[in-house]
Length: 356
Image 1: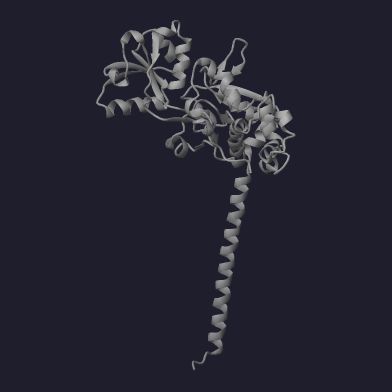
Image 2: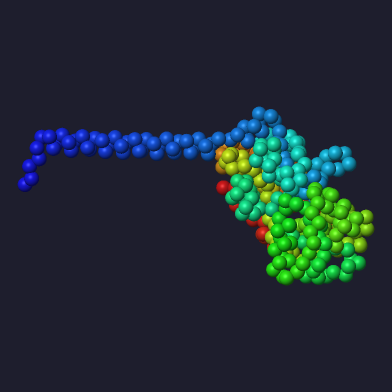
């Protein structure tokens, strides 16, 4: 049996206490880090700012029919505009409490990063670089599109591959620039870019004959054709050369704001699936359907989880409508098919999580 001297015993006790102290300090440091992380996650600078000033500052396009454009009375209309109004209805209880900032493609991300706007709702394609490098979060997808081309019928072009050697009008700061370059390189085709900003000036250049074709996402091109002096003289080619899922963008420093933007978009889609519309929502509040009860805020307590009123989703539908109403009001009149943007139950890909 090994004998331990008194001095050795004291040394062992001292080392044990020191180790315990270090362990306690490490645990305390870890706990402090956790608290700081939780406080950071709870920080709501954008949401608090919106409530303080009493309106949502929304970044939109400089004018694209169906998505964000001014009418003759100076009022904004479009799918992207209605997303902003849905957010205002959820947060402030009033869909009219929105102010719009028209932005070019090159301006939009800086405006969001510098807090000039609270949310970017501007036909913005979600990409890896925009998400990861620019630090912008896209909480939900509200439109599925893809890059395409419009040409004059007089050129007798039937396919994108027949545009070899063409001059192509495009807007800087868009995914369309890279999409065209990639497609033409992959297919050993040549083209000459004519880069003009903003999109309404690009459109004018195409109509003035400065280029053979104009590239944008296909729904935009359908709207462009509708605005042409003689629409029948132009054709939107049927082929898509890229994917373009659109969604509103927010900064990553406000988790609660991100969640509100996400579920405001989801509410528009979910309402259509539940058969709730602006004209039926009041009667539906008395429904015994558990899904409708949760949506209306009668059960579940979901509004409180977002820091909103219990009936936040019902306010969106009452004041803005459901997704089908938004589409029919803004995009359908342009002759754009709903296509992929139908509900999953109708053959589309719109599909959102349940409110539960």
